[in-house]
Image 1: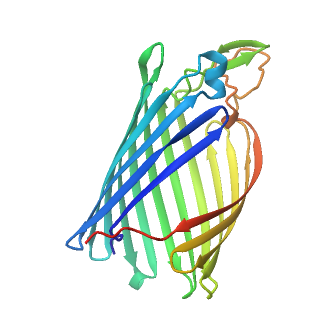
Image 2: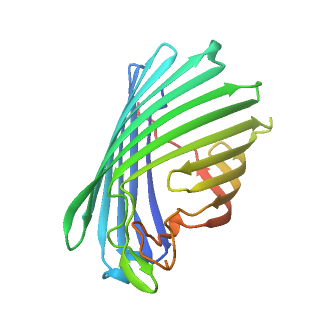
Amino acid sequence: TLPEDRAEGIVHIYNGGGVDAWGPALLVRKSIADKVSLTGSYYLDAVSNASIDVVTTASPYKERRTEYGLGLEYAVRDANLSFGMTRSKEPDYIADAFSVDVSQETFGGMTTVNLGFTRGADQVGQATLGFFDQAKHWQYRLGVTQILTPRWLASANVEAIADSGYLGNPYRAARVTGARVPESLPRTRSSRALNLRAIGDMGSRDAVRGSYRYFWDNWDIKAHTLEAGYSRYVGESFLLDGFVRHYRQSAASFYSDDAQERNTYVTRNRQLGTYDGNTLGAIPKSLVSLKTA
């Protein structure tokens, strides 16, 4: 079946790490003849101040990032075909992506197989230099969802990503024996991820879920994510969702906060360093949608 017709709008606000960002996000979805569903989306980030990487190597700034998306979903027999395009643009970064996904039900609807591919191309720039390099991305997805009982289902998903080109941040500097030097990253990266998930209906307008995700790449990063969640309907228009998550990551082979010698590759990007954290969250969700006639 195709997703239902709807129109949604939100305003997001973020403050942290020296960055203030806010803006609206809009989505409109409309089906045609119960066979085709068209989707359009718009997202705006109005960013002020600057991240720590820019504060230490450049002046704070104000800019806007806009993202446009178009999607088409086609239902044929027991399969759904999806096509999507997005463009994100800001003064020093332009990202374009195209994706194709196929979802096929088998064994009387008890098993669903998903295949997907995304091709991305970025133009990387720097405020004082303009656009100077490119990055390309290939992403391949495979997933299987199985109905175990009338109340329980499980899924397994694998993902492979290949990146090439400029994969660093032109505003970020590394540190070698206390001196600041330009960050240097490999121009290729290959990564894999495996995700196992189960969700069950508790029979009283509530559900529980659990998942485990393992990530690894050829930069020697390995990451584990464990999550457990609980959801419950409140009335007819709201859904309360709570979760607890544990994340642990090892560092890239060339990561160092202060390297003792200059190597071919060096970075002090904290996202590539060792990290261990726990997250506890609760999200109220409104189920009210504006349906078009």
